[in-house]
Amino acid sequence: KNILAAGLVDGTVEFHDFSENLPSKSAKIPGDGDDDEDDTILSSIPVHISDKPKIKATTPLQATQSSSCRAVAFDTLGDILYTASNGGCLAAIDVNRGSYHRTSDNSVLWKIDDASPFGINTISYINPSTPHVGNCIVTGDDEGVIRIWDVRICGGGENRGGKKGAGFDNCMSLPKGCISSFHENTDFISSFEVDSSGDTLLAASADGILTVIDLRKGCKDFKQASLKKMEKMEIEPVKLNPKTVQGPFCLHRKSDDQEDELLSMCIMKGGRKVVCGTQNGVLNFWSWNTWGDISDRFPGHPQSIDALLKVDEETLLTGSSDGVVRVVQVHPDKLLGVLGDHKGFPVEKLKFSAGNKVVGSVSHDAMVRLWDASIFSDDDNVEDYDEAMDEGEDMDADAVAKPAAKKGGDDSEDDWEDVDSDDSMNDSDSDDDDNQKKKGRKLKTENEMFFEDL
Image (cartoon, rainbow, N blue to C red):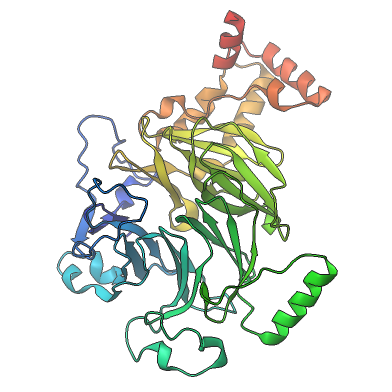
C-alpha cells in the first residue's frame, strides 16, 4: 500500500491509500467528471478530538477555537505516525493497525497531554542514524517553544526526570520523554531541518529569527573547544538563559531579526546554503556557519511562501498563498515553471512520497493533490525537444511537458510554462542558440505571442 496520512481540523487523523492514483496507474484525473473523494480512505482515528485548545495570548477573544490535528510525521520506515494538536498534545499511531478500519480503534500507541505549553504548530522526525540524538522527534509550538523527544521513553516506563545524569539535571520539570526544551523565540515555529551529519538542528520562526541548536553540546569538552574556536573567529557566543534552555543540548546561534516571518525552510547546495520562505514572498539565503544576516535573497513570489520542498541540490518547489506550486532554481536564481495550483487556495505543505514518485500538496480547499514527480528525473522530454528543434519539426515546448504534467491533477494544462531565455541568460552564445531554435520552429510559444502583441 501507499499510505497517506492527513490531520484534520476536527482533531481526527485519516489514512488514505493512493496506490491507484500513482502516475503508472490508469487512475481518474481529479476534475474529470464527478470526484469520489472518499474512495481512497482507509480509516479515521479521533486521536485529538478531546484535546482542549490552548489559545495564544495574542488571539482575539472573539475567535472560536476547536481541537484540531495540526501536524503529522512518519518515522523513517513508515511504521509509526506522530501527531500533534493545537492543545499541545503529542501522540503516536501504529500505521499497520491504524490504516485498517477493524483495528484502528486500538492503534494509538501512546499520547502525552500538555506535551507543550502552547498549541504545537509543527513536528519533525529526526533520523535515527543521527549519532548525537538517536530516535527522536522535535516539536515547535505557537509561542516559540522547541522540544526534543526521545520516542523510546515516551510510551512507557518511569518518568525520565527521575534518571540521574549531569546532562539531564535541569530536565526535572519536563514531560515524560522530553529530553530538551528551548524557548528562545517569541512567535510560532514554522519549520525544522537537520544537517546531513546530524550535528545541527535549525528552527525557523515567524518572529523573523533562525535558531541554530548544536546537538553535540552535551559534551563539556566539545563545548569548551567550540567556545575557544568562536573566540578566535571573533564571534560572540550566545548567552544562555537557564530559564529558557533545558536539557543536554544548547543553543548555538540566533540570526539577526529579518523583520519578516520565516514560514518554511530547506537546506540546499550540499549543506552550504539554508533557504527560508518569508511572508513577503522572498526567499532568504543563509551561508552555513554564518548565521547573523542573510547572504542573498530572491524576490518574485506575489504572496507568502508557506512551503518548501527540496528536489535536488539546485532545485526546490515552493508553495505560495496564491495557490501555485512553482519550480525554482537557486544560485543561479531562476523560476523554471509551475507544477500545478490549488485554484487560489493557499498551499500549506509539500511532501514527497516514498521513492519520490509523487509530490503531495495540501491547501485550504480541503483536498490533497498528488503531482507526478517523475518529470524531475526524466530527461527524455528535454532530449526529444532538442532533437525536434534541430530537425525543424513543428513542436511546441508545452506539448512536450504536458503529458507528464497532466498526471498531476486538474488545471495542469498551464503547467510548466516556458521561461524566456533572454530574461535568464546573459551569455551571448546561449542567445544565439536560442535564436536558431526559434527560426527552426514554426509554432510560436505563449511567451513569443505575448511579446509580439506588445
